[in-house]
Length: 411
Image (cartoon, rainbow, N blue to C red; front, side, top):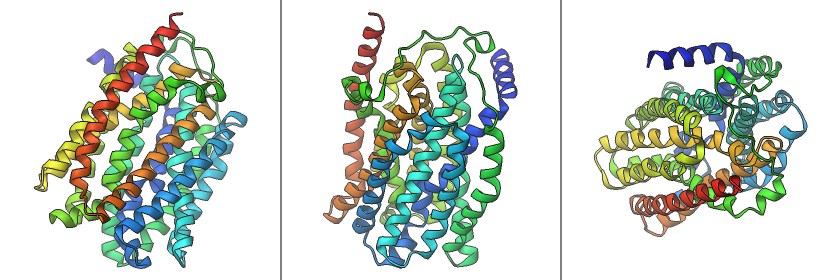
């Protein structure tokens, strides 16, 4: 254990610049993530006179539009350095944070949500994963486990901060304007400074043996590969389920009589668990490879869905957040390391853009479909039972995909 701690400390120290850049990119992607937008969900519905289903449908359309744009915009990471992509991504995200407070009607709100999803959840995480995947080779899993806590830090701190700011100011606009200021005054200059120095990936990082070379697939080849779709069936489940619960947190708190503060206070449980299990997964990836972990990654997700569906007292929220943190720690770290292991790194920007687009699509369908079902009288707890079943079936698909990838690698 002490040796592992020393190795991790040395790794972080020697690569602090690039790891910090990835961490900050995932942290500041929070302003376009569903958990942040969802905190203002009740205020937005009230302001624009939207039902839960109507707001879910609007969010779905905006997110679908961002998912359709991302594969084209993500290609910029294969054409120019990552810091140049940051140079336009963060300002547009900050602009979207301002526009949501100025939207005069539902159409303008939909366009603002589109920008938040595309440049927040989409491009910020796309840059972080793609650049980190290129910067690190033998320690790719460890590097991913270091940058992923950025999202966890956001989920731990920001929802609670928004609730407190809203309570103190009496105006939900204040938190969004503060987000725009932080993006422009802190995130943009700091991340640009960190990323201006490129890291040349080492084949023998920290004395470790490099993984076997993988053929560099083109994006067209990936789209024709059946294994790609088997992988997506499983890997879109966590964002679909997590986004649905976060988006309808107001509905869930009203349904079960929870206080908003109690729900927001549960986010740190998920965040801490995500960080701990992310580091564990990073070490396992570097030791065994991402493919060997694939069949097991959705087990905690299935349990978390069952927890929020079946446990009605408020402590059930904390059980859900704990299990969701375990799932996020494994799935997010594995997701960052998996695609270079399967498809190489030459066209990683374009390939990862397809993956992120699929995940954004899942986050669009979740609120949209669940909102429509809620309006039809099918409650979220019942839906979550179905989602748990999906995780079980998707685990079988992931196991099959892992076998197929290993089989063709051996040819």
